[in-house]
Length: 79
Image (cartoon, rainbow, N blue to C red; front, top):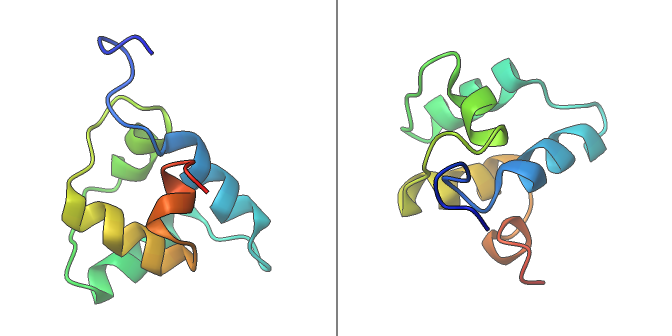
């Protein structure tokens, strides 16, 4: 992994989880789900996370997993 370009491990999995949901979860939907959990992010943040150009805090990681109905380990591609 090239650390200068990849700033997180979960970008691909976030996109995959959004698309596999029925119905699909849009980036705006995910932002709203995170806001309900107290995580306020800028409109472009999900795109940046999925492009791996933005780091993700541990608190955001847990909230994103919960919002998408997946485990933190799945997002980290460990399980």
